[in-house]
Image (cartoon, rainbow, N blue to C red):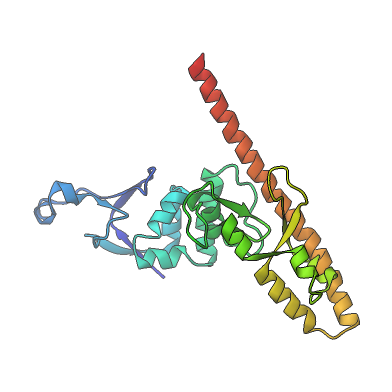
Length: 265
């Protein structure tokens, strides 16, 4: 697999994606180049590169070591070739995202949750804070729910979940099965009681189907034991991500407070 990039090139990481600058051309080349206003080509440009060559994935990965996660997201939108390389689950692609995250996002010490790739992990954390279902772009309206591995607004959460009471009343799902599912504890208001447990509907469907596919007796009993053990580890992992979120918030609050104090005095 090879990637195309302007050659020779210098990548300058910036708050945007960085600039792709061709090396000094000869006199003949200078005559063929467009005006100075368009000779500098940015990664996000839709124009075809003037000088194209193939580089190995290893070299491309080395270049990406100097780019922030935001830069890499922008780079992945330049063309289909970059997108296909950066947005896969291949070890090289995952390592590009991981290296950038660990270098430029020091507060994210934890790896992605089980079943989540590096790109989605970073996207949920910093790149896209809108609801992934309705697209509401107000960051205050959406929240990360590590239990379900999603970022969504309250309205979309309620559409895609059921409370413990909703599941328990019909009696179609045994309580011991419900209790093996990840859930979010939510109050009705700031000081409202009681607190309700909300379960993801897709999880409910897949788990219920799996449970009823087993024969009654020993098979279901062993399945429940494994599910309970998995649930315990899963929720312990979830709590670690919420703790890391809280540490990040505390750090940002402290920096903001110190900044205001320095201005005041």
